[in-house]
Image (cartoon, rainbow, N blue to C red; front, side, top):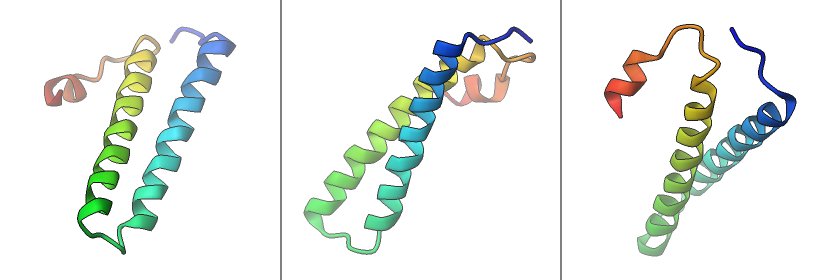
Length: 74
C-alpha cells in the first residue's frame, strides 16, 4: 500500500469529518419533517454524498485491492 502524503490525508480527513457532521444534522432534523424541511434535508444529504464520493475516489489510489462492489453500485 502506498503511503499517503500528509496534505492529502488531512484533506481526506476534513471531507470525511464534514460528511459525519452533515449526517448528524440529518439525524437531528429527522424528527421535525414538513415540506420545507424535507427539501433542506435532501440538500444536506446531497452535499454529504458528494463529499463522501469525492473522498472515496481520492482514497481509491491507496487501496491495496480495488473496491469492485462500490464501482458496480455507482
